[in-house]
Image 1: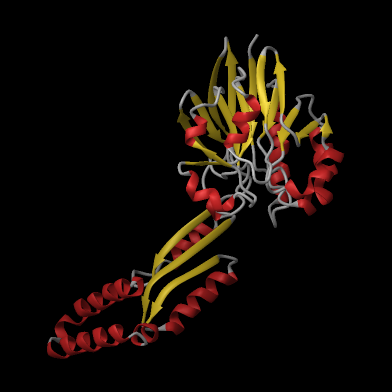
Image 2: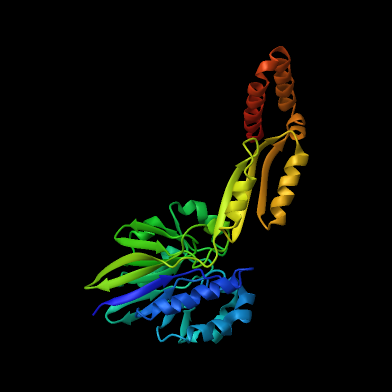
Length: 338
């Protein structure tokens, strides 16, 4: 008999200004879950230890609305609150495993291996010890080079080294930790990060997914399911020396809940730039300034020499002023990177 599973992760309940939207997405998951045998959550249900105390019982009551079991593992964000997790979520409707556990569900063996400080993929291999396991639920980062992470062994980190992954006995690994959907094929296993169910920052722009895992005749077939987000994030880049983008930005503001404008380039008129920045911020638009000013360029010896040389060219050929100004602006961009 086959299984139909939903894989999700990284809810981060308690994330500033995002929690109500996250709970709305969980409600959506509950509606979707009625057609599935169970839901696996690959860690970081909460954003931090305090969030467990504030929102733990609310989450438990929310999940109680469904008959579909939710089975989860501990992630690095709730690791310090392990005692609270064990008190609230040691049994249905939402079970969060704080120790490794292998379940046999309808003949399908599933490893739930929670995050643990200082552990990595070698500990997973040691625990399974070549057991025949179909599916694993882990919370960590796929890494190529073990040397790059050796200094982080005592940090809140769970590296999954590719040389260990190729020895995994699993056909599918449901991952948490990375916040955008990503699928890998390493060795005989398919590894998938489902990403957050709701964008948390501008790093999570784009569609949100959960993964459908169809298990039939020992075959595991994953397929992403777009659940759409409650709120939408968008980043716009504005090169200051280009034409005015204010009207375009205002149009975007009407379409997106969270808008970020990154202003780059060069300016000789900081008053005009500051006025534009103030207007954007009054519209609750996040602004990141990466603009070089004339004063900043002239404070660098090479910048001052460059400017004086351009002024000489303009004096000799005033009809080419715009061309030389453009050359100066492009040169400033290069100087700013040196």
